[in-house]
Image (tube, rainbow, N blue to C red):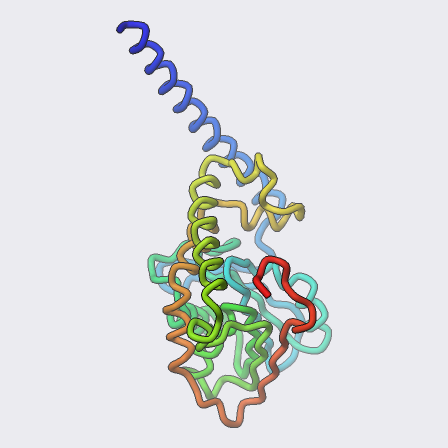
Length: 262
């Protein structure tokens, strides 16, 4: 049985060597990317951890951009410069994404709203604000507006989640949501060993890869998906928003999204 024992030890050694090589590869790649693409804005302490906020332009009210699930501030890269032509506009990274530190608090809308409130105060971004929320960001800004009504000049919902979507959407959508959650958890641990980079599963934009192809972003993405029902419940408890101008931008219903059932 000696040869079996040696074979087993060899397999274990090779597995450990591959795992350590993957961890080293990921660490070096992230370090190089962060040196090549430093934070565009500033890191602001909100009570034991820091959030990244990036502001452009001048004027009031300030437009505040909140990204969709799993996205960093960079998702607004084509929108933010255009808004900056006529007023101040700030995008930011929720905790765990982009350049922001990881947060020990639950990743749900009521927490996001409070973190955003602290961020705007500590970053010296004065109200009033026009809040713009994409997807999950729509739930976040609803909670923020409900708690800080006097500081909000308007809201824009961009393909936002809806508080009642869990009840209204067909079961096929939620099966897909569960699959997305499994993919996120898989990505989280694969990212630790650099596997998504090797599979070229992080997109083609170098800065997008630098921001999102990390263990921290994968971990946070997975938790946001897991707590989506809680975020919807947070959004459902908000309002009314009488007197606040509201614009809703939605996907063209005549252009079906391929990955969704009809």
